[in-house]
Length: 448
Image: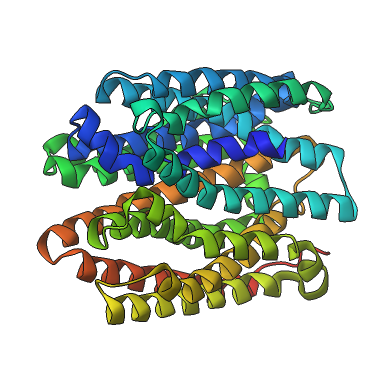
């Protein structure tokens, strides 16, 4: 189950180190390259809650297997895409398949475990999510550098096919579960959520590259009205006894409300850091895809090690683990900034290692604990809703971080250079980590 959960997360990040190679092969514009990242993230974020709701209604194991089949097939489509436009469409379909697959993992954990067993399972899920983001760039760098049989970037998608088939065989042993009273699909809420996210993320990701045409400004103007309409429709539907896509009663739970508020700056900072760091290593420091992936190895090792200890740390220190993680991440970002600026352009992997370890430790402490806090008081019958809300928040924040700080980096690197652009963006990321450290102090105790 965790291997199936890793695939969608890996594929959100795996293209970061392959973008220059995709550009050289398919002659894609800057806007199209950003869409290769954005199309996946947007489809993923829009349909996550729907995926969780469908699993509640039709069976979580059934939706896990269906989503995995679709993910495997769309990965094949990405790997053989003949043009940049075809790759963008295939990436959007791959994101939609991921939205069917991933919510079932948290739902199955919520529905089939309890107590300390659930705590360990959520810790493993959080560890899987974090390590997958790093493995995505490590694996992507290795496969692109290997240039297997002259295929360039294509193996970063084709590798999912044999792995997906293996997981499909293993998934036959998963337990089936579903909600006792399935909630059905809120069609109007789903449409409004799609409009809300698309009207925000598409112009932020594509506006700068296209020169801010009128339609991007118009979409941004639609965003606040779509968001307000979504809130109104969901509240009204719940008052009438219906089943809203995002039940306000669930969002009002202190564990959900406060946890999601902290998760936005955390995941936004993490997504933008992974994107900007990969681009700086290749464009500014000329590491190449394999070197860019290798520079993240200390972060990956630290993250995985600390994630394995997270459930014990939460059992002892409760919600304090999140602000401690945010503080360590902020210190790591400042250390990275100082190291990079002082040694530029001769920055080695050994120079980066101490700050990478600190960032890995801080993110492991905060990420795995945030998942546990948000889901700690969600009723079992609403497991799909809770997991869908959390993962939608995660993916939207990741995409928003790439859209805003990634675009800022692209704009500044063109005018000021990679060094100055990297310094400014990492400074912002350090501030966001400090915000997590401060706001995380008000999180409820998941042990209660």
